[in-house]
Amino acid sequence: MVSGPVNPINPLVADVGSPPIPEAQSWIRRYDGSFGPLINLSQAVPGNAPHAGLLERMAAVAGSAAGSQYGPINGDADLRQAYAADLSHLYEGRIAPEDTAITAGCNMAFFAAMMLLAHRGEAVLLPTPWYFNHQMTLDMLGIEARPLPCRPENGFVPLTDDVEPLIDEKLRAIVLVTPNNPTGAVYPAHVIEAFAQLCRRRGIYLVIDETYRDFLPQGMNRSHGLFSTEEWRDTVIQLYSFSKSYAIPGHRTGAITADVKLVEQLAKILDCIQICAPRTAQAALPWAIDALRDWREDNRAEINRRAQVFQDALAPLPEWKIESVGAYFAYLRHPFPDAKAQQVAEKLATERGVLCLPGSYFGPGQERHLRVAIANVGADVLRGLTERFRGLRV
Image 1 (cartoon, one colour):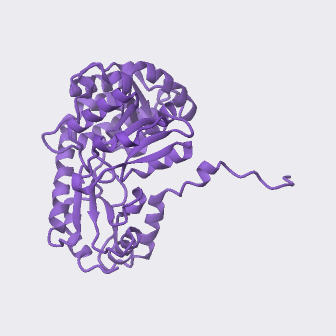
Image 2 (image 1 turned 120 degrees about the vertical axis):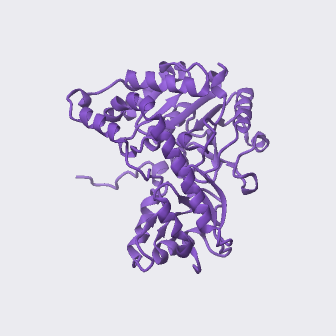
Image 3 (image 1 turned 90 degrees about the vertical axis):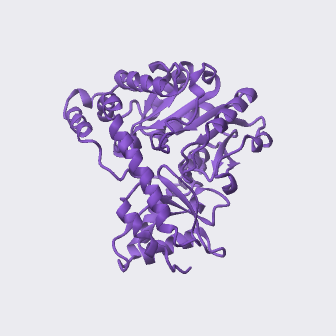
């Protein structure tokens, strides 16, 4: 029996706020249904089911003894081979399987990358508004989340001119997220390549999160050309998610691409926090990477169509300004200058049955914005948003 006071938990964890999405989801319990069924636009969830062939293969693996065993720390060899070949083809560069590691989702990939690159008291630049899990990760690791401004007038695209004053002896990495969560902004290739040059010149890492890579605008098949030369190996780490592209977020499958020497160091971290990534999806994805290209293209076209439908739905309401839209997200400026973002989001949820997230969840200076996850529902549902938003009072 403990006789004295219990030691407190790690203050770096205690001081981090609770996961924000469950908080927002609690608001919907107060919605009375008067505007129709709830429209949940809060979380980036694929609005379509996985391909039937993928489900069949995963079911077979899940029902096998082999699929229940531990796998290699850095991921199954067949998936690393197929993924590296796909990257090499897409980016027209040389990426070997040994330059990749499979993780339990892209959040795990980010966590492992941050543990690798920085320690307590050091700093990482995050584009603001930022993805809240990125900021929470850095806070819990004792790493300063230093804001990299992304301004509405620049389409929420960061500029290298803003970075030089933010670089000091504590800075270890710059993070870019494209297509961006929460804004949906797609960073031009020349901007990404300028950041890579800056990082190479200043001796810091560039971590580029391409979770939504497979939902770029039609005709744009890759975000950058960083992998076309061998220079990337010195400073670039790429993160990716199979979860969104193949509609399997519950199977937690992501990837890290980095030079083999960095991947060897990452293995130490991955061995401690996951031992191996889930095996079921790993066994089926090597087939899916090639076999489901057309299916993924159809999904991309549909998501881009939904983005246009969302814009059309809000066009009659110019007081609600869509400041950025792309891939899974739209970033919306609400018309209530004296209201906080959470007040507006809560009103939409409880009175109109539309659940989206307040900009305040995504960092400082975002009280005038809401994030809308447009991929969650079909175009027919998005068309009904006009009347849900019309006449809202806060």
